[in-house]
Amino acid sequence: MESRHVRMIMARHNDSPTTANRMLRLLSMLMEHAIHMGWAENNPTAGVPRMKIKSDGIRSWTDDEIARYEARWPSGTRERLALALLLYTGQRRSDVVKMGSRSLTGHGIHVRQQKTGTELVIPIHEQLRIELDQWQPNGAGTFLATEKGRPMSVNNFYNQFIDWCREAGLPPGCSPHGLRKAAARRLAEAGCTTHQIAAITGHRSLAEVARYTRAAEQVELARSAILRLRG
Image 1 (tube, rainbow, N blue to C red):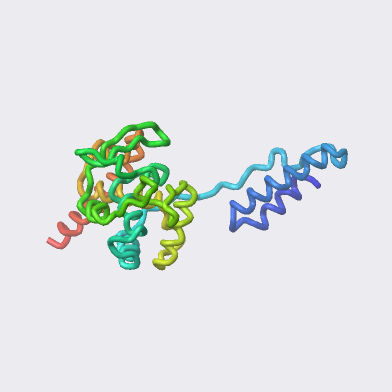
Image 2 (cartoon, rainbow, N blue to C red; image 1 turned 90 degrees about the vertical axis):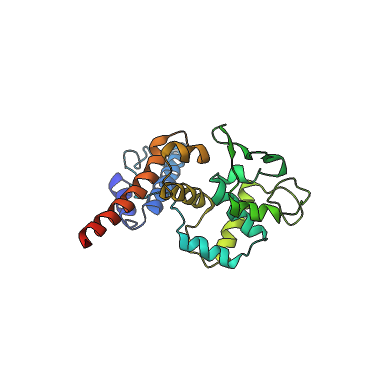
């Protein structure tokens, strides 16, 4: 096998760069084993570049998707509480699964972000307050727990939440992290500054937060421009 053969194999998956790159990795492992066994002298995958993956990353939920989820899971359910915690605190799922009665302070919900170590106190939005007021202690000490009353692991919560989204008829791509993005988007659309948004989400990079404010400003500027045109 030569490098040109590897490129030909990858070319068959031009429509799926992820699959092509996975094939490249498997071929590389196979050829390294062949060299080790004395069946080949060199690895033809060496120097063959990975295909570039065009992606905007995890997307924000739309307001329509949020409404559809809420329509499926009424107030007072564990599923609705999960959405409220994600959307109205703007935190990652690794932090949401740890939230419980001990997280509550006189000023809001205290969070020490697992990823960054950043400490935040987030005021409780009225919609989140409605769900927390209906929460029943479950023996786990956390707001979100398994049916057996145990704290949810990050992976368990993720899988469970994806199932809830599927049951609500939402499209693939609606994820817990997408609600963190939706929280930042809504804050930007409400006119919050980058520093105000970061005070909720805990982002250390204001450049990342600025993407949301720029998008919100673009919508408002475009609306103003059309109104001027009509006038």
